[in-house]
Image 1: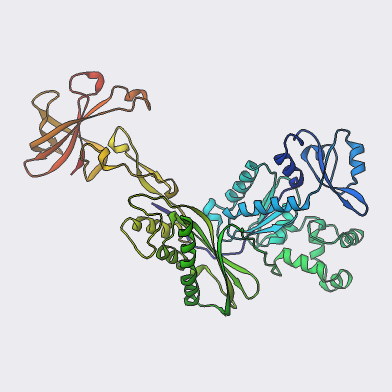
Image 2 (image 1 turned 90 degrees about the vertical axis):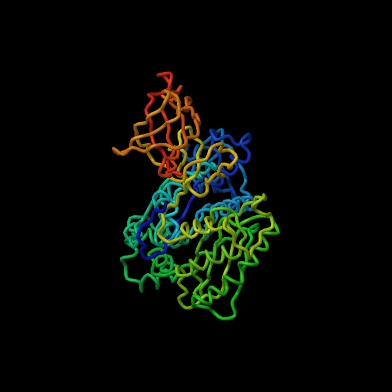
Length: 519
């Protein structure tokens, strides 16, 4: 079952994530005994021969403390203040771990040091139910890790950063092409400008980004230099600023610098064909299979085109992974050419050994068992597809409830044939059809039945197979009985009939007969 939407032109979308209490939350999570959350806590560092507050906890912020104030002043305002000296190396290591974690969202996470992250989420939102749902999910998952955050999404990384840092605990979703209107009321302090420049702008009465953007460019450049215009242009989307993409050190990743830039689909396919076997060899050596691959193409202008493919189960099959990546080539826009490519296994799991699957996969072979998984992979990675579901067997008292709709990731192993003591029909009706049956005894085998005013005589019958209701699911199923019979008519039809009840006790069922399937 496949649910999709029409394909629309892909526009670049950037998510910015700001953690206003990052410095203190890291300490409260790693050392809760020393830094309880109900006590005001500040982190400080030496600057200009005095200790200055660089980070505050929510309790400290509520007490009136803010980053940038002298530590001595903070101590005078809060008598029971907890303090800790800033550990830049530990903070960088923790932010690196968080950036590595964020790769679940998109293949292009990046740092916004010291307390933020970026992610190029172009083409990823449909995987999470849309952009609004994606932002909610990011904040929900980050809160589960113990961090407060503000998130923003727009057409440029600089605009998203300014919007995310404009208010604590904020979610801001800017529709495509509307970042100028969103930035207009924000203060100039939202831009990463030097303190001297911000002070000069304040003296001139230029307090908002909108007021700054409406001024002629030449006088601004002459008075403040090119940095001010660069920050403004990056935020408004007039100038691109490629992100420095982060790649986790423990991932299987291959990087190839090309002798000449490439721009054709055939050349990209050739590079994929050269990289995938090497990745599969590394996976096989670990006894693992890929669940997600990221293919990054670095263009000559420094920007990155990224595609991501996923699999329904761990695999190290060269043919299967190559086919998936080749199917995404139309999503790559080479522009003036691609000079570097990176293939990364962003998610992997152990390969399950068993009678049908070896720990060391035959990467060149294809089997009937691999066909359903290959089809699922192609559907999951098709642009515009929202969701894919499978029908999975489910143990139930009544056969019509013996299937459920599940996602490929939740697909359970099918029941073994030995668990089916009686044969099941090839065609099973969604709802049993009422028939009139003639039997020699109330609990005996059927001899003939009437369906749609046509009488069918039964030449042979096998049964009964008794099924009991799921009394633990519903009260009306307590004591419910069905007796199933496999019958063959004089015309050669093989059918599956059942009677409600045991034919003797009224509490076990009404005694009505039904046709449920055809063999």
